Length: 357
Image 1 (tube, rainbow, N blue to C red):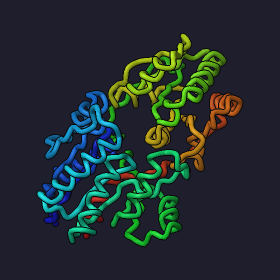
Image 2 (tube, rainbow, N blue to C red):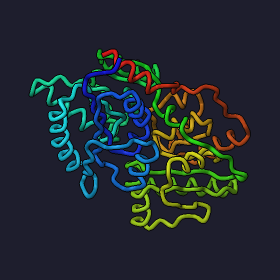
Image 3 (cartoon, rainbow, N blue to C red):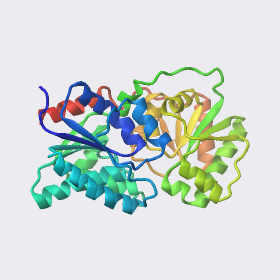
Image 4 (cartoon, rainbow, N blue to C red):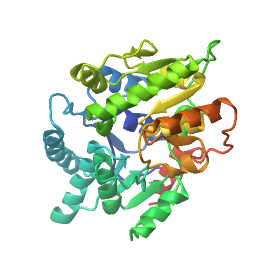
């Protein structure tokens, strides 16, 4: 049965586009009543436009382009006001948000404000709910907690996240569906390299790139392991990370090959062919797990503990000795995992549940 209620899908960053794309394509294919809002939080071509084209998102109903030259606070204030007007104009019934970005939390708060102060009844559906790093210094942690506690439907990747939400006293509809990234990865056409003797590196998180000592420590660890194992390190570098490397006057080792950000397909092909990936990314923990690639996470915590439990991921704690030991175990064939915790046909499950509503 075709849904009659008006759905708004809100995103503004590369991860949101990637993870909401399979869901949006189902809405399009089945002719649902929906509109897309792009806040423009990620405004560069390489971080936004290329992904919209790659996943065939099509027409954006409201392309706000608010991210460029705006601080986080100014961006969120502007987006809050504009997004509320959109929700009112479209007579929205259901809002779908994903993850833990400023776009996600601002969208949800705008809907919540209309519900509380103006008598609206906009149901908020949070895709990828229940993730927790328990590190309140991360802006993403504050965002995801806020969105979970005001959402009406919470779609969690695994049972772990459902238990977290229940332990926080959340009594709304919690549904275990998996992660939509598993749907997106099915669209990638992989190829094999002849030479797979390289490491892959990404660094972009605020706590790593805005801390000079921490960024230098990460790069020193990577340089050391590259020289121990005689592997080059391919480093697709986030624009902000490039700025900080220049600002801190960090001279990279010859082993570390810095390149500009590349498209999603090419990056995943690099990941698939690498010996080991090093990253502070959250999404890469899922992608590497699904693709059966070893990952060492350049952080002290993770909001994806299922990857640690099944042994696909390793928290470095920025401890050089622990990293070297883990690499040795991987290269000796001592690290294995057999299952993908992120499910299949996840977007279909989410749409089916919303359709029941």
